[in-house]
Length: 440
Image (cartoon, helix red, strand yellow):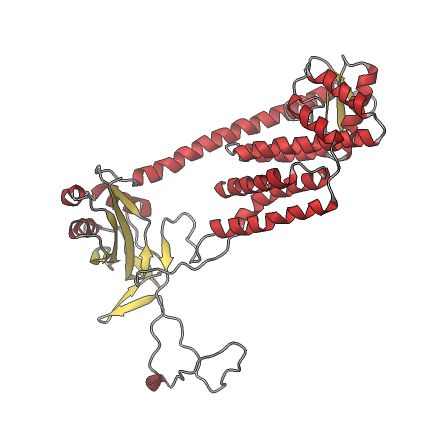
């Protein structure tokens, strides 16, 4: 959702700065619609960028635990805040979706009351708008004179010819999804403006005098109020822009080249919000796998490998030995095998969330470090043994003795309910966890 919002903001900036003042209404309409569609699709596309670890260790790395200076843990905020945000978002989504459905139902009710009318003209009363179009119908206020009604019908017919109402439904659906994003409302206003410009242009090209057409608009604007999701003929907020566009000099064809400026914007956004490459996390897991670093190549004398460099475009010696196989997903120390990736990972009470909660609740910020203003990130490595215990805990990256000792103390208290299993046998599994101590 955040990525969609970022794309919408960037695309609207391009439209507002470069395109909105041009009289190429069809191009602007296409740009807005493609921007809305692209904002939904492009977040699913990410560029995989390498982000090498600075620490030459490996194992199953858990999510970070943050310990604050007041003795509390930030983990509770990390767990509760997403749930609160989700509740707020779903409430807004339900409200706007219900509102959209109610508006559509009101249109169907209005059409059903006038089902015996001939053609696609439906007259109504008690709505404070001169006319609008929806679902292939033109809705006209009964209070209008025949002359005014004829010109407004012609205007609304232009909306129907260009299928503008489908655009409105599309952006209303997107507004329900992105209701928290102000740029979706700016796009909505811009799209409706383009619709009105196109309808005005169609009327003027048919021979309607500019002065009489502008007079009709002004006569209707002071007694109208825009209908909820429809194209209102006399929307007061658009009147000034429509008056200007009716008499504005047509933009030149070269103005279309400005649309190419959206390409570097897309490129910059894709790079900015792309994730780093790595193994995909299992669904619902709070951990990720870190692949072991490749071992150094053996010396040429022991393996027969040549130290000759392979240059792109040059043939490879057919007698050269094959490259070494990738390292196995385990390490051997003193004859004992410790696994990194296994069939079944060790089980802590309440899963990984329970493990992180245990660490956060039992870790205390040392007073000496707090008084000295010391803070930082401690990274620990430990092994979950075959009997579900913890051994070999050590500090991979430390901050100071007090913080390192506190992190080690808590990790050594861990007791898992089940060990890890490989091929049906209990095995030792290596873990890593970062614990951040912060005074802020």
